[in-house]
Length: 234
Image (cartoon, rainbow, N blue to C red; front, side, top):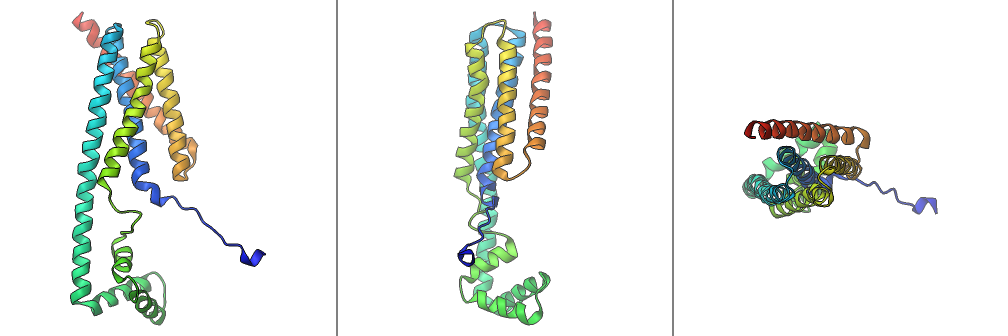
């Protein structure tokens, strides 16, 4: 029974693309929208004005995140495609040199010359392009650049994060508006930091503190600027 048991390791590197986009989008949505509405609320207590500013920030931020991620990841994808095309050409025209490069890679990893040669030749009988992409360039199916995925995840997570401080502003009274928004944003940031660390397999404590410190600093500074600007205009 024990001999039949399989050791299954759970790795999380395949989540890197969408996890980065999701955490960045949600964090940016919470911090930027909370800071925006707190800055406006500190200068003017009219609910409609604060909500309008917050909704404009949500839409603009989500679209900006989507476009930015799409352009950035598309550039990465273009570079990957160029590298793949070059590798395909080299495999077609100089297969002996490519095999020698693969042998050198395995020797560098610690294999003996004979074993490195054997491993390289054995793997080259299968999908040789996939082998060279993985070993030479570090490109795998899990790590491929996906612009549409990055854009949609970023926009959606930004909007979800931004909705939380907007909801707090909408339901709170004028006297509790600032405090409720701050508490809501900090709780959301703490949960986001812990969740991102858990999904990424990292200790949650440091990630949570990092996210909370950055968010609290941004909100505090925006409130001070909004209050000072409001007083100056008045």
